[in-house]
Amino acid sequence: MAGANIPSSPTATQADWTGPVESVLGWSPTRDWHPLNGLATAATGFIIGGGIGWFVRITATLIMGREAFGTGDIHMMAAAGCVAGWPVGLLGFVICSVLALAGWLMLVPFKRARAIPLGPWLSIAFFIVVIFYEPLMEWTPVRNMVEVFGDPATMFQNFTAPKRLP
Image (cartoon, rainbow, N blue to C red; front, side):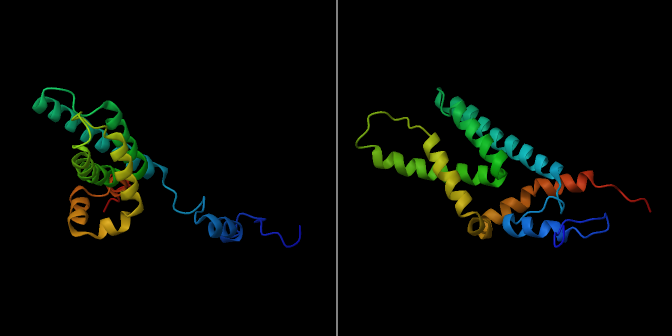
């Protein structure tokens, strides 16, 4: 097999055979892969997204005396937090509230029902946050929020890192 870039011994460099994969996908299976950090980030996003949903549901139900936030909305928030991270879930909920209020105000003259489904507005808000994630993270109030709560992967890595004895 002349000319093949497959390593023939354990001393061959990883760049010999991961170069094409890394250049096409932007990812290498052997470089800096920490599955527990990903699991911690996903679990944290799921818990925070679902927690926000349950908090809103319970609080709004107690205030208004009827169900105000469906379990489907809670599941959407938990899934968005799990897949895209807790900042996306939190920012998506805030943007969803603004979008839903604006949509409701535009539909008031044409619609008799006072309740609106929140699922479509959540979907649009999560899409907006994912597309404009970098500019939103550069905005000072959002950056301060993320700094206050911290990055779950970094917290997990610091918690699980082996401690060196003096």
